[in-house]
Length: 360
Image (cartoon, rainbow, N blue to C red; front, side, top):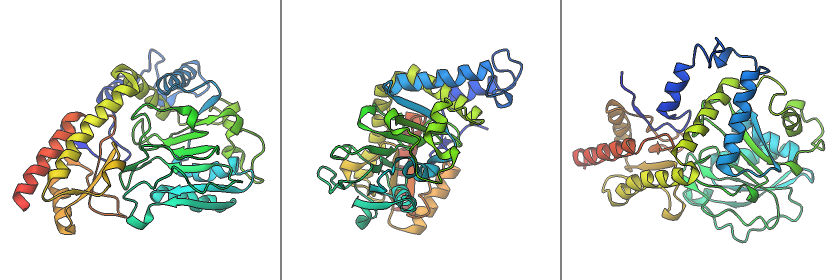
């Protein structure tokens, strides 16, 4: 069975080299006589895996020394609660709502304090990023929150919001490591890894040290306190060890590909092929305003639900998997993360051209 082109939004395509390497090491990791899956998280071999993974991530992103890197569980959705529990000292936070995940995060944060939705693009089905150059940032806000790339709607912040000195917290689940990033502009960057970095089950949190304190909201569980994990180097309890091991391999793969500059170039090249076709197509159209388009998630529609369904079905038969749009919006969506090869996007566009000819 040959591998398909997998356009899933997550769990998503991983680099083939990484999967092959992991397969080779499955039964015996580097002479230990066991799989990483079976290994104690307190062992020398695993300690080397997690410290190397962290160092490679620090190298790739240029993470300064005053930021901690935490490998946690619970996915990005658990961070919706963990962030206010740890950061909402004044019980006030500002949220910029540009999609379902920011909307969910804001709703969760309301359990812990006052949430001000200082900008939103819900009026146009989240098809754009609002102007965030001069927002009514609350004077007593503990932080300003964004979801930087919106997986469902295919939008991306090209310019970070002006937080007027307040701490910026960003969910980068679907654009993690897709381009260079200035970590110092954020207080917290976090993301589930199952889109661009590894298997589901790991969330990476990059957090400035001054935000890690014992002064958390009353009733915050030990496991949901950043300090617990920071003090224990992500080994307070058994971490998602195998997932971290795969993430580490993906970091090495990105380094070998030339780092984040090279990734950005590669991603722009792939996205251009698809967007250029959408811009001139008579049947398909993109749903996002041009200047806010994501390099990672590309939603598109024909305008006819039956035709959309036919396209998804026939694409699957042609080896182009998981092109159905999110259930909340319908249509189609191609997620073209780091590990999606250029050839995959070309194959998709070729298929779209053929489908257009047959169905116009």
